[in-house]
Image 1 (cartoon, helix red, strand yellow):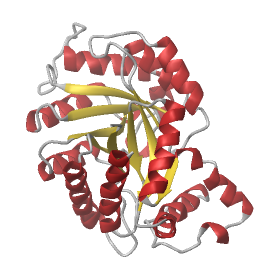
Image 2 (cartoon, helix red, strand yellow; image 1 turned 120 degrees about the vertical axis):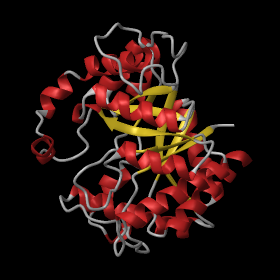
Image 3 (cartoon, helix red, strand yellow; image 1 turned 180 degrees about the vertical axis):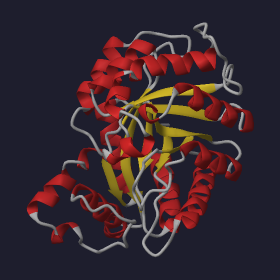
Length: 328
């Protein structure tokens, strides 16, 4: 059976706040664990009133205490925003708290608009240039495979699974060169999906951590009792995405029936571009669309994203999605 994982942005809903978002994330992670999902990942984003996962390692500590067996991790930590030593300490601490359950997915993008560089007191463009070296240094801090003048405590010797995240050929090439598992952000950037996965598999070099290529691909998945209900639930995320692309990000808005039909052609086309990695509908519809996507990508795992205004609807979506996969 295809392995499923969950990606959560810890959405802050209109009429609600960060405390409620964090509480809902904990409940969602527990629901994912109960339903049989393999991993629960949180993504680092900054400067958005609708996303509460910016302090990723802190959020993961909360998620860890809400669960007991599911792997938890970052999808991902944007390494140019940080230095490798601090991340090694943070995730080494998480491994000490939740042994054998920690994933560390690494990305190169800053996860926010340019003003973030001022807030972080960093030249993020220059930091991104050193991303490959920083990944190698971070791995060495965790594994000791390179002799460094300082040790991360906690960190050194931690049982952490490193992942490379990406939406372009750069991440695919780096993951292949370092022998890391690779997660592709097809749910919001599908344009280079096929080329990136081909590049990763063709150029992969085995490492101590991984002897053959391992691909995770992201999909937007919202499952409900019927297609119309699922599309209505998904309209909250559609509204949020359109607002983001329009330069007006905000909290996650309520659903609107037939939302896409109300949009101008340009906005409809923007959303339609993401349909290659989208499975929204009934159990049968979701099963068919995930199946087609897996046939296309030959992914080893699928990580499902997709926020709903009603937190209970997303928990039920995870249950129905797993039902769809098990019935396939």
